[in-house]
Image: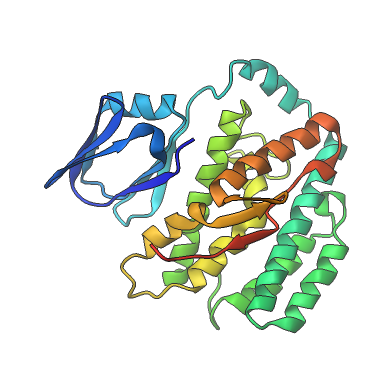
Amino acid sequence: MGFRIVVINSRCKLETRLNYLVVRGESEKKIYINEINTLIVQSTAVSLTVALLSVLAENNIKVIFCDEKCNPQSEIIPYYGAHNTTKKYKWQFGWDEGLKHKVWRKIIIQKILNQSALLAKLGFDKESRMLLSYADCVQDGDLSNREGHAAKVYFNCVLPDGMSRHSGGFINGCLNYGYAVLLSAFNREVVASGLLTQLGVWHDNEFNEFNFSCDLMEPLRPVVDETALSLKEQDGQFKKKMANILNFNAVIDGTHTTLDLAIRKIVRSVISAFESGDESQICYPQEILINNEL
Protein backbone atom coordinates (compact mmCIF):
# COMPACT_ATOMS: atom_id res chain seq x y z
CA MET A 1 0.00 0.00 0.00
CA GLY A 2 1.50 3.31 -1.11
CA PHE A 3 1.77 6.37 1.07
CA ARG A 4 2.36 9.24 -1.36
CA ILE A 5 -0.35 11.59 -2.65
CA VAL A 6 1.05 12.89 -5.94
CA VAL A 7 -0.44 16.14 -7.29
CA ILE A 8 0.31 17.14 -10.90
CA ASN A 9 -0.57 20.81 -11.49
CA SER A 10 1.47 21.91 -14.52
CA ARG A 11 1.90 20.94 -18.18
CA CYS A 12 3.74 17.62 -18.52
CA LYS A 13 3.53 14.09 -19.82
CA LEU A 14 3.03 11.13 -17.50
CA GLU A 15 4.20 7.65 -18.43
CA THR A 16 5.50 4.49 -16.83
CA ARG A 17 8.97 3.03 -17.07
CA LEU A 18 10.46 0.12 -15.06
CA ASN A 19 7.69 0.36 -12.42
CA TYR A 20 8.16 4.10 -12.01
CA LEU A 21 5.78 6.98 -12.69
CA VAL A 22 7.79 9.26 -14.97
CA VAL A 23 6.84 12.96 -15.04
CA ARG A 24 8.29 14.67 -18.12
CA GLY A 25 8.01 18.45 -17.87
CA GLU A 26 10.72 21.09 -17.80
CA SER A 27 12.71 18.37 -16.09
CA GLU A 28 12.16 14.65 -15.65
CA LYS A 29 11.12 13.21 -12.29
CA LYS A 30 10.48 9.60 -11.30
CA ILE A 31 8.33 8.21 -8.47
CA TYR A 32 8.28 4.53 -7.55
CA ILE A 33 4.79 3.17 -8.37
CA ASN A 34 4.51 1.16 -5.14
CA GLU A 35 4.97 4.35 -3.09
CA ILE A 36 1.93 6.05 -4.66
CA ASN A 37 -1.43 5.94 -2.93
CA THR A 38 -3.33 8.58 -4.92
CA LEU A 39 -2.55 10.50 -8.12
CA ILE A 40 -4.38 13.82 -8.54
CA VAL A 41 -4.14 15.35 -12.02
CA GLN A 42 -5.06 18.99 -11.41
CA SER A 43 -4.07 20.49 -14.77
CA THR A 44 -5.95 19.85 -18.00
CA ALA A 45 -2.64 20.41 -19.81
CA VAL A 46 -1.37 17.00 -18.67
CA SER A 47 -1.14 14.07 -21.09
CA LEU A 48 -0.64 10.48 -19.98
CA THR A 49 -0.33 7.02 -21.48
CA VAL A 50 -2.80 4.16 -21.34
CA ALA A 51 0.06 1.93 -20.19
CA LEU A 52 0.44 4.13 -17.11
CA LEU A 53 -3.30 4.03 -16.36
CA SER A 54 -3.22 0.23 -16.62
CA VAL A 55 -0.29 -0.03 -14.18
CA LEU A 56 -1.97 2.36 -11.72
CA ALA A 57 -5.20 0.32 -11.84
CA GLU A 58 -3.30 -2.95 -11.34
CA ASN A 59 -1.71 -1.47 -8.21
CA ASN A 60 -5.04 -0.20 -6.87
CA ILE A 61 -3.86 3.43 -7.04
CA LYS A 62 -6.63 6.00 -7.04
CA VAL A 63 -6.47 8.45 -9.98
CA ILE A 64 -8.46 11.69 -9.74
CA PHE A 65 -8.87 14.08 -12.68
CA CYS A 66 -9.70 17.76 -12.12
CA ASP A 67 -11.49 20.24 -14.37
CA GLU A 68 -10.21 23.59 -15.65
CA LYS A 69 -10.93 25.12 -12.22
CA CYS A 70 -8.81 22.42 -10.53
CA ASN A 71 -11.87 20.87 -8.88
CA PRO A 72 -12.15 17.04 -8.77
CA GLN A 73 -14.30 15.94 -11.69
CA SER A 74 -13.82 12.20 -12.21
CA GLU A 75 -11.78 9.24 -11.08
CA ILE A 76 -10.66 5.81 -12.25
CA ILE A 77 -11.95 2.73 -10.46
CA PRO A 78 -10.93 -0.84 -11.42
CA TYR A 79 -13.77 -3.10 -12.59
CA TYR A 80 -12.93 -5.82 -10.09
CA GLY A 81 -11.41 -5.43 -6.63
CA ALA A 82 -11.48 -9.10 -5.60
CA HIS A 83 -11.37 -12.54 -7.19
CA ASN A 84 -14.93 -13.36 -6.04
CA THR A 85 -16.76 -10.12 -6.78
CA THR A 86 -19.85 -11.90 -8.17
CA LYS A 87 -20.35 -13.70 -4.85
CA LYS A 88 -19.82 -10.48 -2.92
CA TYR A 89 -22.23 -8.52 -5.11
CA LYS A 90 -24.97 -11.10 -4.44
CA TRP A 91 -24.23 -10.94 -0.72
CA GLN A 92 -24.34 -7.15 -0.73
CA PHE A 93 -27.70 -7.11 -2.53
CA GLY A 94 -29.08 -9.38 0.20
CA TRP A 95 -28.15 -7.25 3.22
CA ASP A 96 -30.91 -7.27 5.83
CA GLU A 97 -32.86 -3.99 5.91
CA GLY A 98 -33.11 -4.03 9.69
CA LEU A 99 -29.35 -4.40 10.03
CA LYS A 100 -28.81 -1.61 7.48
CA HIS A 101 -30.92 0.69 9.68
CA LYS A 102 -28.82 -0.23 12.72
CA VAL A 103 -25.58 0.37 10.79
CA TRP A 104 -26.87 3.75 9.61
CA ARG A 105 -27.76 4.70 13.18
CA LYS A 106 -24.21 3.86 14.27
CA ILE A 107 -22.73 5.96 11.45
CA ILE A 108 -24.95 8.98 12.13
CA ILE A 109 -24.27 8.93 15.86
CA GLN A 110 -20.54 9.02 15.12
CA LYS A 111 -20.99 11.85 12.63
CA ILE A 112 -22.95 13.99 15.08
CA LEU A 113 -20.45 13.28 17.87
CA ASN A 114 -17.60 14.41 15.60
CA GLN A 115 -19.52 17.55 14.67
CA SER A 116 -20.14 18.24 18.34
CA ALA A 117 -16.45 17.83 19.13
CA LEU A 118 -15.49 20.36 16.46
CA LEU A 119 -18.07 22.87 17.72
CA ALA A 120 -16.64 22.53 21.24
CA LYS A 121 -13.15 23.07 19.85
CA LEU A 122 -14.34 26.24 18.10
CA GLY A 123 -15.96 27.57 21.28
CA PHE A 124 -19.62 26.83 20.50
CA ASP A 125 -20.28 25.05 23.81
CA LYS A 126 -24.07 25.45 23.84
CA GLU A 127 -24.46 24.15 20.30
CA SER A 128 -21.99 21.33 21.00
CA ARG A 129 -24.13 20.13 23.91
CA MET A 130 -27.22 20.39 21.72
CA LEU A 131 -25.64 18.04 19.19
CA LEU A 132 -24.75 15.59 21.97
CA SER A 133 -28.44 15.48 22.89
CA TYR A 134 -29.29 14.82 19.22
CA ALA A 135 -26.80 11.94 19.13
CA ASP A 136 -28.57 10.36 22.12
CA CYS A 137 -31.87 10.42 20.21
CA VAL A 138 -30.83 8.86 16.90
CA GLN A 139 -33.12 5.96 16.00
CA ASP A 140 -32.47 3.00 13.72
CA GLY A 141 -32.42 4.39 10.20
CA ASP A 142 -32.43 7.90 11.74
CA LEU A 143 -36.21 8.06 11.27
CA SER A 144 -36.45 11.36 13.20
CA ASN A 145 -33.74 12.95 11.00
CA ARG A 146 -31.39 13.92 13.81
CA GLU A 147 -28.69 14.20 11.15
CA GLY A 148 -30.56 17.00 9.38
CA HIS A 149 -31.30 18.90 12.60
CA ALA A 150 -27.68 18.58 13.69
CA ALA A 151 -26.43 19.78 10.30
CA LYS A 152 -28.50 22.95 10.52
CA VAL A 153 -27.08 23.85 13.94
CA TYR A 154 -23.59 22.81 12.92
CA PHE A 155 -23.25 24.77 9.69
CA ASN A 156 -24.86 27.85 11.22
CA CYS A 157 -21.86 27.85 13.56
CA VAL A 158 -18.96 26.86 11.33
CA LEU A 159 -19.82 28.86 8.20
CA PRO A 160 -19.46 32.65 8.16
CA ASP A 161 -22.61 34.74 8.62
CA GLY A 162 -24.81 34.76 5.55
CA MET A 163 -23.12 31.77 3.95
CA SER A 164 -24.75 28.42 3.25
CA ARG A 165 -23.38 25.23 1.75
CA HIS A 166 -24.85 26.27 -1.60
CA SER A 167 -23.62 29.85 -1.75
CA GLY A 168 -20.18 29.19 -3.27
CA GLY A 169 -17.04 30.99 -2.19
CA PHE A 170 -13.60 29.94 -1.01
CA ILE A 171 -14.64 27.87 2.04
CA ASN A 172 -17.30 25.94 0.14
CA GLY A 173 -14.79 25.31 -2.64
CA CYS A 174 -12.34 23.87 -0.13
CA LEU A 175 -15.09 21.74 1.43
CA ASN A 176 -16.16 20.32 -1.93
CA TYR A 177 -12.56 19.56 -2.88
CA GLY A 178 -11.83 17.89 0.45
CA TYR A 179 -15.03 15.84 0.38
CA ALA A 180 -14.12 14.61 -3.12
CA VAL A 181 -10.66 13.50 -1.94
CA LEU A 182 -12.22 11.74 1.05
CA LEU A 183 -14.84 10.05 -1.13
CA SER A 184 -12.14 8.78 -3.49
CA ALA A 185 -10.30 7.10 -0.64
CA PHE A 186 -13.49 5.29 0.42
CA ASN A 187 -14.24 4.33 -3.19
CA ARG A 188 -10.82 2.72 -3.47
CA GLU A 189 -11.29 0.63 -0.34
CA VAL A 190 -14.86 -0.41 -1.18
CA VAL A 191 -13.78 -1.59 -4.64
CA ALA A 192 -10.72 -3.32 -3.18
CA SER A 193 -13.09 -5.22 -0.89
CA GLY A 194 -14.99 -6.52 -3.91
CA LEU A 195 -18.18 -4.58 -3.19
CA LEU A 196 -20.26 -2.12 -5.19
CA THR A 197 -19.88 1.59 -4.49
CA GLN A 198 -23.32 2.17 -6.00
CA LEU A 199 -25.31 0.09 -3.49
CA GLY A 200 -25.64 2.16 -0.34
CA VAL A 201 -26.86 1.55 3.19
CA TRP A 202 -28.90 4.76 3.30
CA HIS A 203 -27.90 6.81 0.23
CA ASP A 204 -29.99 5.56 -2.69
CA ASN A 205 -29.68 8.09 -5.50
CA GLU A 206 -29.95 6.48 -8.92
CA PHE A 207 -27.58 9.12 -10.31
CA ASN A 208 -24.93 8.61 -7.61
CA GLU A 209 -22.34 5.97 -8.45
CA PHE A 210 -20.88 6.16 -4.94
CA ASN A 211 -23.84 5.71 -2.58
CA PHE A 212 -22.06 3.23 -0.30
CA SER A 213 -18.92 5.35 -0.06
CA CYS A 214 -21.03 8.42 0.72
CA ASP A 215 -22.57 6.48 3.62
CA LEU A 216 -19.22 5.49 5.08
CA MET A 217 -17.49 8.88 4.81
CA GLU A 218 -20.15 10.84 6.74
CA PRO A 219 -18.43 10.79 10.17
CA LEU A 220 -15.17 12.08 8.64
CA ARG A 221 -16.67 15.19 7.04
CA PRO A 222 -15.76 17.32 10.11
CA VAL A 223 -12.08 16.57 9.38
CA VAL A 224 -12.51 18.29 6.02
CA ASP A 225 -14.52 21.09 7.64
CA GLU A 226 -11.87 21.87 10.25
CA THR A 227 -9.12 21.79 7.63
CA ALA A 228 -11.01 24.14 5.30
CA LEU A 229 -11.72 26.61 8.12
CA SER A 230 -8.00 26.82 8.91
CA LEU A 231 -7.03 27.92 5.38
CA LYS A 232 -6.71 31.42 3.96
CA GLU A 233 -7.86 32.34 0.46
CA GLN A 234 -4.52 33.92 -0.39
CA ASP A 235 -2.77 30.63 0.37
CA GLY A 236 -1.81 29.27 -3.03
CA GLN A 237 -1.26 25.81 -1.51
CA PHE A 238 -4.81 25.31 -0.28
CA LYS A 239 -5.67 22.50 -2.73
CA LYS A 240 -2.54 20.57 -1.79
CA LYS A 241 -3.37 21.08 1.87
CA MET A 242 -6.91 19.78 1.36
CA ALA A 243 -5.54 16.75 -0.51
CA ASN A 244 -3.14 16.18 2.39
CA ILE A 245 -5.98 15.19 4.74
CA LEU A 246 -5.33 11.52 3.92
CA ASN A 247 -1.89 11.86 5.50
CA PHE A 248 -3.21 13.16 8.82
CA ASN A 249 -2.30 11.07 11.86
CA ALA A 250 -5.21 9.11 13.30
CA VAL A 251 -5.91 6.74 16.17
CA ILE A 252 -8.38 3.96 15.40
CA ASP A 253 -9.11 0.94 17.56
CA GLY A 254 -6.11 1.91 19.71
CA THR A 255 -3.69 1.92 16.76
CA HIS A 256 -1.77 4.98 15.52
CA THR A 257 -1.87 5.27 11.73
CA THR A 258 -2.69 7.68 8.90
CA LEU A 259 -6.24 8.69 8.04
CA ASP A 260 -5.86 6.91 4.70
CA LEU A 261 -5.07 3.59 6.38
CA ALA A 262 -7.77 4.24 8.98
CA ILE A 263 -10.29 4.43 6.13
CA ARG A 264 -9.33 0.88 5.19
CA LYS A 265 -10.13 -0.21 8.77
CA ILE A 266 -13.44 1.65 8.68
CA VAL A 267 -14.55 -0.13 5.51
CA ARG A 268 -13.46 -3.51 6.84
CA SER A 269 -15.27 -2.88 10.14
CA VAL A 270 -18.54 -2.11 8.34
CA ILE A 271 -18.16 -5.24 6.22
CA SER A 272 -17.51 -7.20 9.42
CA ALA A 273 -20.70 -5.76 10.90
CA PHE A 274 -22.73 -7.09 7.98
CA GLU A 275 -20.95 -10.45 8.11
CA SER A 276 -21.60 -10.88 11.83
CA GLY A 277 -24.94 -9.09 12.06
CA ASP A 278 -23.45 -6.92 14.82
CA GLU A 279 -23.23 -3.17 14.19
CA SER A 280 -20.98 -2.75 17.24
CA GLN A 281 -18.13 -4.06 15.03
CA ILE A 282 -18.03 -0.67 13.28
CA CYS A 283 -15.12 1.54 14.30
CA TYR A 284 -14.09 5.07 13.40
CA PRO A 285 -10.99 7.02 14.51
CA GLN A 286 -11.04 8.14 18.14
CA GLU A 287 -8.67 10.99 17.27
CA ILE A 288 -7.42 12.72 14.13
CA LEU A 289 -4.60 15.27 14.22
CA ILE A 290 -5.27 18.15 11.82
CA ASN A 291 -1.96 19.22 10.30
CA ASN A 292 -1.66 21.47 7.25
CA GLU A 293 2.11 21.68 7.18
CA LEU A 294 3.36 20.55 3.79
